[in-house]
Image (tube, rainbow, N blue to C red):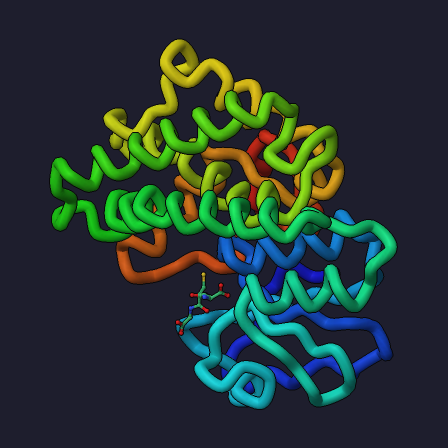
Length: 254
Ligand SMILES: N[C@@H](CCC(=O)N[C@@H](CS)C(=O)NCC(=O)O)C(=O)O
């Protein structure tokens, strides 16, 4: 699988019968779907898209040209990470990732909803830092505090229980990226291990979940990509082909 992001003028690789996920290596929404596919051991191909010079054919799969989009049958696709993930969980029921109790499923959605303020603050801090307001830093920490409280009241290793589930895979890509903010000079966004002891334990546990471990990137790597994007020239192909995984950034081949 190549980490190269296809762009306008590039041809669509031939369909080979497997599910195919259109993604961008640094997109947190696409990562949600990658994690679900990994966790459920579903075979799939990944096609990375340069979102600044989109290949024409991406619009056949995703009307606005956003990622992720999932080609579930040749030429037929659905889009939006949450829609894709619920579809995958229901279509491939073998290892269910959603709670079986409808109330718990609703509560999991509320956790995701309550976390959206922290996500919004992250985007401003990372990509539009001159627009950063003190209330955004507060929102960020409110989101983390809420998550930590939820972990405490559930009393389980993951939000979903002994194993990570859909709610964990939905939030993780953002937590992974939050860790890069102090490296970008945003120390007010640091996740202090004393204040956030339980959350920090959870973050370490998530890094070790196989579905996450095989795709997650080091904070340094996220910071480097963010800097390139904030300057208006995202370095989509900054990773070499073996760069998936681990908390260590890899050097670009000379
Ligand atoms: N609600 C969507 C959001 C997806 C999204 O915003 N993806 C970004 C990349 S991280 C994208 O495709 N941006 C390109 C564009 O908006 O043209 C989801 O959950 O999948």
